[in-house]
Image (tube, rainbow, N blue to C red; front, side, top):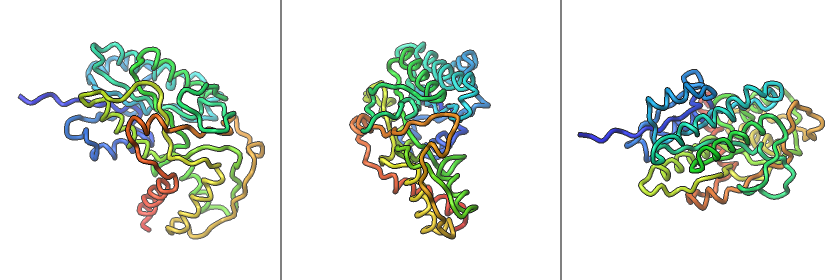
Length: 310
C-alpha cells in the first residue's frame, strides 16, 4: 500500500509570488513526494479563523506557505481594518491552526516586508534589528510577524523588499508602461533599498520548504530576510529597467529620467528612506548563492520580451 502523499498548502496563490511559486514547483525536489495545493483569496479568506480551520483540517498540510497579503501601501492608511485583518489576524489564524496540530506536524513559512523598519539605518538591517514601521501597512505586517511567532515559535518569517515579476502590477511593469507612453519621467532618488524578483524569492522559499520537510528538519526557526542584493534608489532601478528594456527591444527608445526627492512626490504613506536588509541568515542556513539584482531583472525582462513576441 502506497504511502499517502504529503501536502503543502500555498495561501495567496493569486498574487505575483503565488503564481511564481506554482510555476517553480514542478522543478522542486519536493514535487515527486509532495503535492502543492494553491489557494486564492476567493478559495480561502485567512482573516476568517473558522474558514482556516475548516479548510486546513480537511487538507492536513505538512507545510503552510503564507504568501497572502494586503499590499496596497497607500490605501492601507485609510483601510487599516482590512490591512490588519489580512496581514495580522489572518497570519495569526494560520499560525494558531498549525500550532494546534500534534507533534509539530505542520510547519509554516510566512512572507513579510522591509516596511517593518523606519529607514533610519545606514547599513543593512540585521534580522534582529529593532522594528518601527512608519505606516499602517508596515505596522500590520509587523503585527502579523509577532502573532505568528507568539503562537508558533517554530515558524519561519521571511522578509523581502521591492518585489517584482512578470505577473500582476509592480514597479518594473509600471515603469515599462510609462516609459512607452511618455517622453520624460521623474523618479524618487532618496529611498534606498534592494529589488527582489519573485523567482529568486520563490527559489529561497522552496529551499526552505525542502529543509523543513526533510528528515532532519534542518532549518532554524525565526526571522530571515531575502532580496537580490543591491543598495540602490528607485531612480537607479528605473535607469537599469530602461537600459535593459531598450537593449532587448522591449522599448523602442530611451526617454529622459529625472531624479527627484520624496518630498516632490508626496504619498499618503511614508516609506523608509533606507531599507536594505542583511541576507546573512538565509545564506548561512541554505547556502544560497549570491544573486545579482541586475541579472534577476534581466530574466524578467527576457520573459516580458518573449511575451511581447520580441
